[in-house]
Image 1 (spheres, rainbow over the protein chains, first blue to last red):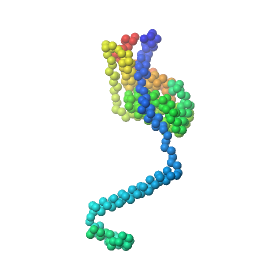
Image 2 (image 1 turned 180 degrees about the vertical axis):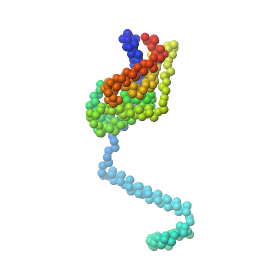
Image 3 (image 1 turned 90 degrees about the horizontal axis):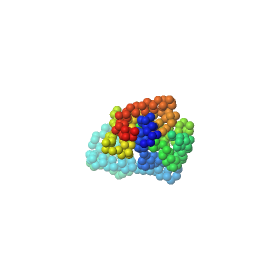
Image 4 (image 1 turned 90 degrees about the vertical axis):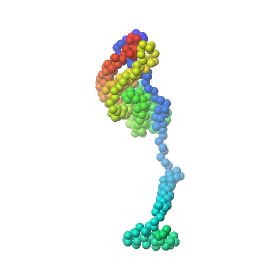
Length: 121
Length: 192
C-alpha cells in the first residue's frame, strides 16, 4: 500500500470498504438488459381498414355467432339425451297450453309433425 | 455523475428516438441508466433478485412515459431513480423487520487472498448498509457508491442539498461505527 493510500484510509476508515463495494458491484446481466430493451420495442400498429379489418370482423362476430350456434345445438342434444321423459308430461299450466298450441300451428307445417312435444311418447 | 455520461437533454433526445421505435436509442438509455439503478436497488434491498425486478419495472415505466415526456421536468435518469426509490420503499415496507447479518469472514490466520478479502469487505459494507435508516442508506449509496453529486441526489430524494449533506454525514458515521469491530477480521491490521 502506498503512503497516499494509507493516509487516505486513516482519514476515512470507510474508504477501503467503499472501494471494495464498488469493485464487487452487481452487473446488469445480458438477459435482463435484453428484456428491458425488448420492452421498449414497437407497440402493435393500429389496424388499417381493408381485408385485415374484414377478417377481424368476421372472426370476431360471425365466427363467435357460429360457435354459439354449435354450443346451443350440443346443449339441445344433451338435454334430449338426459331427459327422455316427454315435456308435455311436466303438466304445463293452462296459460302455457295456449301458447304451446300456437307453437304447434307454426311448427307442424314446417317439420311435418303433429305435435313435437309428444315426440318420444 | 449522471451528467458526465450523457447530458439530460441528450437523454431526452434518446427517449424521443425510443418513441420513434429506435432500438439503438433504447439500448443506449438502458446501458446508461439500468446498471446504476440495479446497483442502487440491490444495496437498498439486499437482494439481487428483487433489484432486477425493480430495475425492469422502473425502465418499463420510463418507456411507457416516453410518449408524454416533457423536457425540463427532470432528466430521464433522475426520473427512473425516483421510480426505483419508490418501488424499493414499497418493498421494504411490505417486509417483516429483518436483522442484517455480517457475512462469514475469511480467517486472516489462513493467509489472505486479496480478492477474497475484497469480497468480504464488500459484503460487510452491504450488510452494514442494511442496518442504516432508509434515507441515510440511499444518500450514502448514491453519493459514495454511485458517485452522484449532492444536487443530483437532492433531485432524486426531493430534498434540499443541505439535507443530503446531513444524511450522508450521519450515514457514514454510523457505518464507521458498525464496521469498526470488523476491521481486524477484514485484514486492516496488515494493510496499515
